[in-house]
Amino acid sequence: MMILFWLFPDQCIYCHESTAIKQEAGLHDAPSNNKTNSAIDIVITQTQTPCFGESTGEAQAIANSTNGGPYSFTWSHGQTGSVVNGLTAGTYTVTVTDGANEMDSTSIMIQQYQAVIVNVAFVPPSCHGLPNATAAINLLNGGAGMGDTSFYNFHWSAPGSGNVTQLNGLSGDITYGLTVTDFEGCSGSYTFTVNQPPAIVINTNIQHERCFGDTMGSIQITGIQNASLPVSYLWSSGSAGTTIQNLTAGIYTVTATDSKGCQQVTDIEIFQPEALSLSFENTELLCASDLTAEIIATVNGGEPDYQFLWSDNSIGSSISQLGPGVYGLTVTDENNCSVSGSQTIQPADSLILSATNTEPTCFGGQDGRIKLNIDGGLQPFRYSLNGQAFGGSSIFLGLSADVYTLEVQDANGCMAQLTDTLQQPAPVEVLVSADTSIIFGESVMLSAEAFNTVGNTQFYWSASLVDSFFCVDSMFCDQIMVIPAYSNTFQITAIDANGCSGKTSVQVSVQKPHGVFVPTAFSPNGDQINDLLVVHGLSGQVNSILNFSIYDRWGELVYQDMNFEVNQPNRGWDGSFRGQACDPGVFVWHLEVEYTDGFRENLKGNIMLIR
Picture 1 (tube, helix red, strand yellow):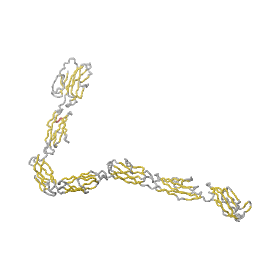
Picture 2 (cartoon, helix red, strand yellow):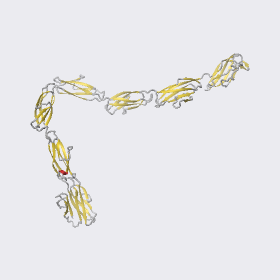
Picture 3 (cartoon, helix red, strand yellow):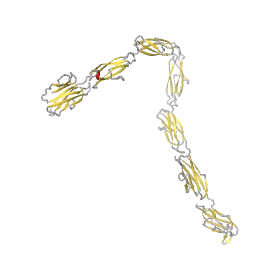
Picture 4 (cartoon, helix red, strand yellow):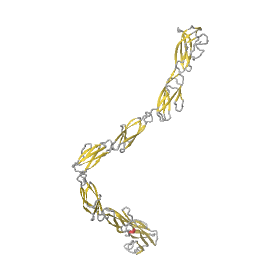
């Protein structure tokens, strides 16, 4: 047995083969398909009706046979299973195979909703430009709503219109759109343009001034178009009627109102023939130093031909090769009426340069820095230092104290120059003890002080000849104690916390006077006073007397001693020779001395022997 299902009255949703049955909506028995060998009953139900022309239909097949399941379903459009979807309107056949592998098939006609059709009628605005038109739906059919407006949603293109079937307050000469959608999502659209009455046109006859300053102007309305008579006229001066007279030059506004209340507002200008109007156009300067601007003058009014005279005595309607400034122009027409005006050529946006400097850290240093700051101009900028090639960095590094020429070029090719000075920091000055002189063997303290420094300052001492010294202040060594053996120059270098340094020097002279002294006379007479001729000296300077010899006036050696120290009271010449006391007289002495620094010296002198 077969079952038929209708969704709508008098609509055949399922018809087996050529059988067409129309009944009330609902589930009904279908007549037998006369297949005596079939034991499968098949019921097909359309579960979803698509919108017109869409593929959203769905159907479900249910099978029952004496053989039992399982059942397999194969549809004519290729889908399988008891439920199929994505169907357009048309006929679909399903073949069912039961558990005994017996087969049967039947068909269904998938129905679709009718197309949604909508039409809109409108009443145009009462006057040109008034937003009082009305539009309303006058035809609606199709879809699941079946023409009942309560089953549809309405979306108008007019802003803020809402879900309504009628719109008010519409403007003319505008195209509007309407989209209607039913509860199944089926939709239809309609586009319409609201026409409006033509604008009222006022025809006038204008009498302009004959001369500048006259009050002979007049305006007469000679006709009106697209208006409903009668028409009233009201002028901006307060007058009424079709004609106003004794007018000065200017703009007069007339408002025409017809019998429907439609209005047209028109401005009418009274010209003075001698009142020339002058306007200017000019090209702009790209760079502040350019002389490339041009001014073009345009004259209206008066009586051609025009004569032009510029403030720089140029003639013609244009002048060129101009720099910044105000340029005046007087134009005289054929009636000898004139008008004057001026045009200003604005200076170009100047490249204003400033520099942010970082001075060199130390005197003579090369770690200075200049950063160029730019106000104005058109990016990107390029930069040059002292005429070098332009580059993209505004920061110049590794500079010493000097005067620099900085240039900037912007995207327009405009140039600007700045002279900037990196100041030389004060040099580190080192003051040291004055040059000094000491006696060989003495010690001396040398002190140094640094100025123009930052933070703690370290002092470094050196000498060309190696001498032993030590820092009195072991942290910064601004004082040293030294015992020089030789005259020497000490170099002092001071280095502050920034690494800046200063140098100076001090000379220490080591005096080496004769450290040996031989008396000029002695009296060897046994009175225990000055009885021996003793060699005296500074023991700290003298290492040894290598040889001490005494000669008489004839050059004969009378005394000699060797390798002894100075200042020995019991070691010297007693005034005798070969055991005999020498006669009083003058004797000559020679000696060779070795000092503690290893230096040797030969000395000689005279001695008077007294008795």
